[in-house]
Length: 128
View (cartoon, rainbow, N blue to C red):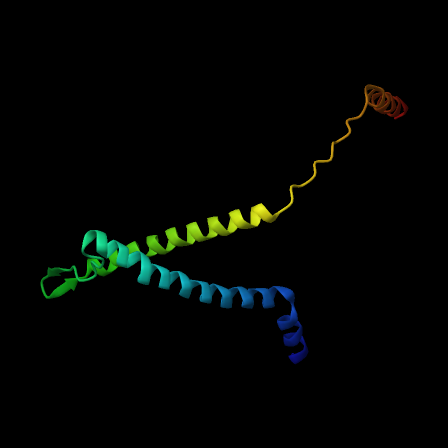
């Protein structure tokens, strides 16, 4: 069982997944910091208010805190927008560095070759 576990852990897919998870966590921290410390202050400067989390609706004795939900949705869209632009920027950088693939012309069969193939198929059909 220990041997099987070592083989499972040593597989490339598991190690790549672990590295991807760690890198994703670190990248999430970067994007969250960008949104919280740069994007949100810009929104505060333009609108005067950045958080709507304090909004709620009282229904009897219960508080329906819809402001927190709206703030989470807004934060999600801000993070998604920042991620979109970062990935788009990275893709443009990597595409500039890639060499253009060389197009190899595909040689089409000649008319004679096609006619020979048809002749051979007809001959095979007649034999059967």
